[in-house]
Length: 351
Image (tube, rainbow, N blue to C red):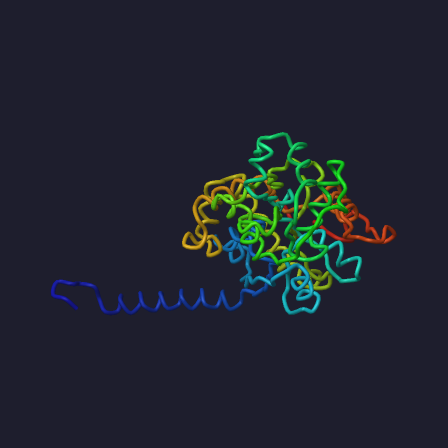
């Protein structure tokens, strides 16, 4: 103790004991907090609400510790939940419809998109040739899809393929004339920039990367809500086994609420959402250029829901897309859009 310091040794000991007690209390709380595993189908900004919730520690605030991983695709993500190796899967709703048709026990308990978020990119030369921009009439932009050469897609039957068929049909074209090259998601941007394919569709930032490089152009950013059939549409949803969420209602409610808070922040405090998203490891500035991030953010921001609850009308759009795009091949197996079969709001709560 320095000369002149009048702090009594007993006071120091009491302070240290108090600090130790506080640390022990926090440690005990963390140990008592249940841990859940959440797999995402892929890592992109369609899951922006999830990244914000993770960055701002909304899961811990709601009483759970979340371990978040990427499954590398919708099918392995769903299979992991069905096989009980993870608790939740964040993946596309039309994939859940297909899983239901195939007999998988899954239910959606929260939606973290209110529009389909795919961005359709074409080679810049194609957009320039037809004098098209994102401000051009949607009908003109849809029409050019029928004139494309090879289109890149992740795999046969994937939404990255079906979206082109759906939009070409919508514009009066013949989807059977489209030619697809199946390359997997990571290879699509480079394939477009090297003139291997004329177009592809993925959620941000994949298409936006090609625009920033001057090689591609995001012609139809569906996240902006220009296509009515794909707007008011629960695209990426949180799914789980029905028996798991019934047996773990508090955990299900905590996870659904944390995700919903992440999406709501885009409406209540958009700059805070943007900052949190930029600070997340997925958006690391050393890996994601600022121009790409800004364009991607503006594309997905309108697709973030004010809360994670769902509607029958929204699920009718999902089922109509799945049936119209050929994801559901047998009309007799088209499921009901009513709450209780594919989805439920009983765990998502209210803001």
